[in-house]
Length: 53
Image (cartoon, rainbow, N blue to C red; front, side, top):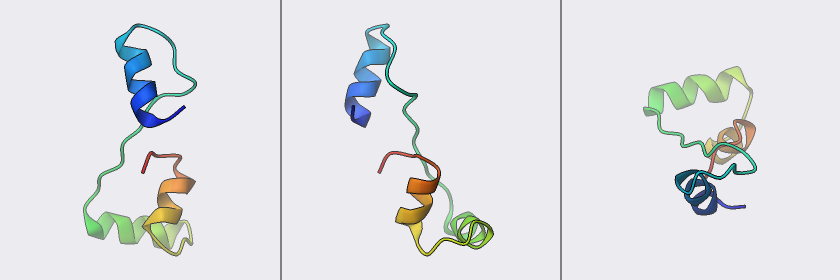
C-alpha cells in the first residue's frame, strides 16, 4: 500500500496497513540523525525511520 492509499483509507475510516508518516526536518537535524544512526544519506535515513519518500 502506498502513501496516498494509506491516507485515503484513513479518510474513509478504514484501517491502513500502517500509519502514514511524513518526514521534514531542517538540514542540521538531518546531519545529526545521520551521524547518530551511522547512515550515509537522507534516503537511508528515510528507510531507517520507515517514512514515505
